[in-house]
Image 1: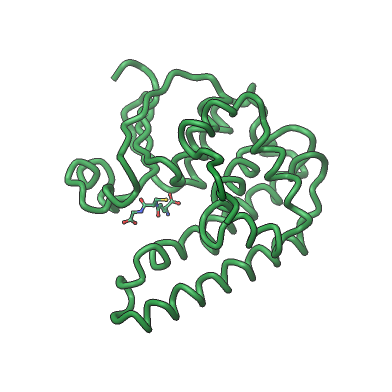
Image 2: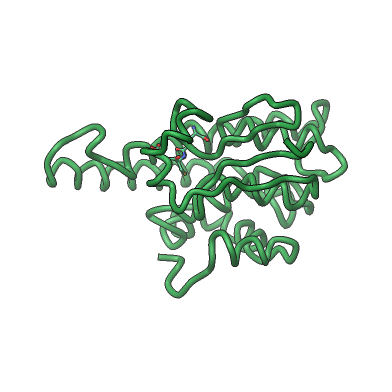
Length: 218
Ligand SMILES: N[C@@H](CCC(=O)N[C@@H](CS)C(=O)NCC(=O)O)C(=O)O
């Protein structure tokens, strides 16, 4: 340990939201990178770090392990209040912040465990295609709900300063059915994620870890 954070991650995965938070915080951290989230599933090293064989996994300077992206992001924001990445515990925005952090994690992100590898819950091409289709519909429903319930309080979801909630939504909304699906389901939130895409302090991170390559919006 060099006194900083050690983040286990993979390009384009949920770890990129944590990487974005660490970049904005400016605390020392280093990345233990997998080639892709698919490699994580079969990695014995990953299993030793996180028995769930998933990224992100964050080793704190204390040596403690944190998994679960929403918890990691919330903890990082709370531990570095100077970065202004989450409303304070006594802020009137805190309930909204916690609600949607958990919503993204529990209602949306968790669906990718089956969506990414449908054979985990079904066998046969036809059943797997049904899973792909129905999880896409469910994800769109979740975004529609969020769109109907959240009016951005400024440039970003909670005001004019970017928060870890914005970072989280920005990364997760790039997964299948990808950004075009997200914009269609949640038009009122489109400008928020576009503002995070365009955040100058994150330009190098996006380019390296989740590039806006040709056709990236889907
Ligand atoms: N509940 C976890 C889910 C993490 C997760 O599903 N990560 C994906 C990458 S985006 C992964 O590691 N997948 C490999 C697998 O589940 O086998 C969190 O919120 O951090």
